[in-house]
Structure formats: structure tokens, C-alpha cells
Image 1 (cartoon, rainbow, N blue to C red):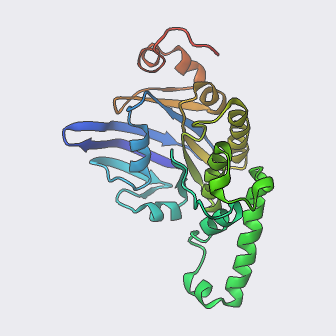
Image 2 (spheres, rainbow, N blue to C red):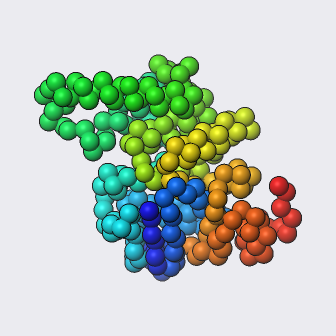
Image 3 (tube, rainbow, N blue to C red):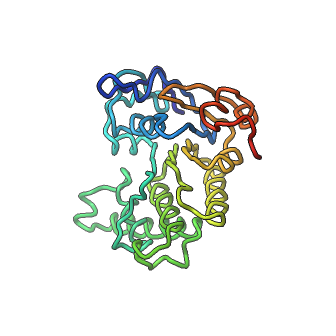
Length: 254
């Protein structure tokens, strides 16, 4: 589904990402980890069109997407979340998801503007789909609550729900568990698993090592912009270079 080869990004003389390679197959759940400043979010920004690479190849389902704008990448089926949750603060949960659904490329602008019978049917479909996303994400109890009034964990879940409204084939999650308490982490890990089980391929950045190890089939490790390891969670736990660079100890508590 996604092929990244020789991806590099220089800021002045500094290589934020250096000759990074990664292949993701349809149906995988892959983790991208590394110390702070390793280049993880920069990699996401390069892949999704928020930054242009200095060099390298990015292929999505066989199509070259280097140089495409973020909305064009999303139209191709690759959608991301952000470390800072992107929501309309004064919109309710439902309004946020409905608004995100209208960004779907299947929505025809002129039909919506003229309020044709086709657009009315489309609006009914979007509302039904949005309510289904709310149910699936466990947000029924706050459906009509303004986003700014939500507790932190619900805001993070809403950010993922907004991404789902764009009907992604490949979902990139940037630290979805950030700032959550233990109960919220457990709930969100379960949600991510259920999203993956619905057939959506996932690439995950996450600092919560326990959650990453429990979620991901395969883990890729970045350090100073370079890939230093790739393998199963068990292989990554035992990798001495990862232990030195990321864990900082030879003892990993499972």
C-alpha cells in the first residue's frame, strides 16, 4: 500500500530524516517509534504532503505522491491525525464529524451549493455515517457537546473520529494516546484495534511503549532521522541498538 524509499529532508545542513525506507502492506498495523527529535513527525509531514522531501520516493498504491498537497494525499486515501488535536472547538461532536465528512472528495460542491435532491440524499447519508462513527467510537453520550467542553481523552478520540469521516484506506496516527490517563489509554487502544480490524491499514507514532508493543505487528525505530531497527515487538525489545537509543536501559518491563 505504501512504499517509502530513500526519503530525506534537510533543514539547512541538518538531516531531519536521512535515507528512510519503509514498506507497509494492506491490512498491517505498524508502529514508528524513536526518541524525541528522532524525525517521526517530520516523516509523517513528508508522507502526507505537509513538507516536501529533499529527495526520495513515496508511492501510495503504486502512485507517486511526492509534491502532492495534503488534501490531494487525503483524496488518495491516506489520512492523518495530529499531536495537537485538530477540531472545530465551538462545533459539537456531531457537527465536527459532519464537517469532516463534507471534505470527502465524493461530495460534489455545486450540488451542495444548489441543494439538489442528490445533495439532500448525500446529506442524509453523511448524517447517518457520522452517527455510525460516533457510535463506533463510543461518543454517543457527548454527541451534542461542544468540542471545547470535552475532557482531553474525548478530544483525542474525536480527532480520530474526524479522520475516519474521510474514509481512509491508510490511517496515520500521531501520538493518539498523548496526555491520557490509564483508563483512557486502555479504551483508545481498544478503539485502534477495532479500527484496524475493520480493514483500515494503520501507521502509528506513539511514545507509550507498552501500548505500542501490544498494538503493532511490526515496529520501525528511528534515531537522528535514520532507521536503526525494524521487526516484531519481541525483536525490538531485544535489539541492543534500540535499547541504547530509545529505552536507555537493558531491562525492558513488559
